[in-house]
Amino acid sequence: MTRRTLPQRRYAETFDLEFSLQAGGTLHHTITVGYFPDTREPAEVFVNGIKSGTDAEALARDGAILLSLALQHHVPLQTITQAITRTPTGEPMTIVGALADRLRQEVKP
Image: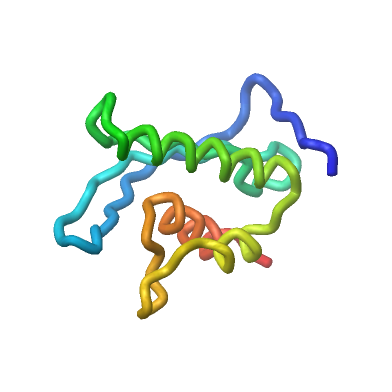
């Protein structure tokens, strides 16, 4: 499918998201979500809050880029949330998975 391009200026929201690690501890992230202007569905995501230059930061940023590209290529959030890696109890194992779950909860079908 063709990628939906975004205008230079678009509505966006920023919020904090905590993510609990499997090994213990909690990471605090600041998330910005940009929306398609015609539908107000999520179109792009940015993840901040991880120490700059770390592997974890690179993985979170790359995951956000891939999530954004999937959304811009019409991949439904339901498909994304069903495909992410989860714990045996069903919790997402990454910040990107937790973000996708939150976005899916906020988008009305």
